[in-house]
Image (cartoon, rainbow, N blue to C red; front, side):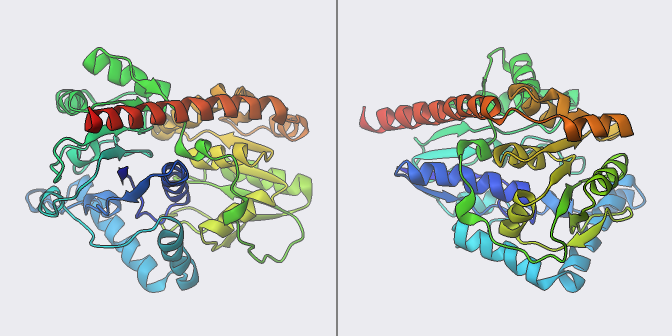
Length: 383
């Protein structure tokens, strides 16, 4: 069966690439011809177009910042790291062919698939500048008009949706043949909009139980280290990471973030996706405020702590909190720095046998949903 996947496969973001890799690999391992639809709209990462009617608006300022950051990283960033991301996309995601910037370009391509899948990642999170992108709800024409259209573990990126998007998203959801979401907050949003409760499935990274085949060594100067994967802010996570590194008398490494506007946390390193996994796997301890930093720490059975984002960013914590609750590790989350709490987390060993059992249950749930959707697709074509 020919499967087309729509997600953020183009991003130089570790989590985005690992979830893309895992979903495609699941389909390929199940015997299907799965590939990514190479859609890369301008509004994702670059922020979209500048609104000349409101030149000095906050939205325009963010668009300009994102564009300058991208150019700075392209011209002055670490070329080895950039090449590593590109190589990962080629070798492990199988990205090739034309890139599509708009829905019109997609439709003109007359793509042919039996099953279309949107997700995972925050593909259902409306952009401040662009709003809702119908393409990420599979609302576009392909050559095979009878193709089944489903979602697998998309995220709205927050616990509540801005009401101004309700009507548009409701209509897009009603066009899908199968709906699953990644978080319980997403279940609530979908049920409120269309009256039907979607399936809550795990992030695609959970579908795979072994990542050893893609890990690649990264040379560092210290014999032991703490790995800090922090996004969006240094608040709290910086203090927590430095405290834990001091406890282990270990080096503190943080992967380069082109959007960082805060003082670096420890020493900046420049791993490709495979080397990022190596640094996480070899760490004495992992400190993160990222959903995929949390997910991969759990999957690789590493001691870790999730540090909550603060203030108006706190809504992003719902994703990691949902995963922690599902595997019984709520205690690994902190939202304020405390030496006592940090010491407790370091000394509190994780029952990985119990956690892995819950991961297997989640894995079975995700695989069951996908298998059912494949069966429905097959029946539709053979019926």
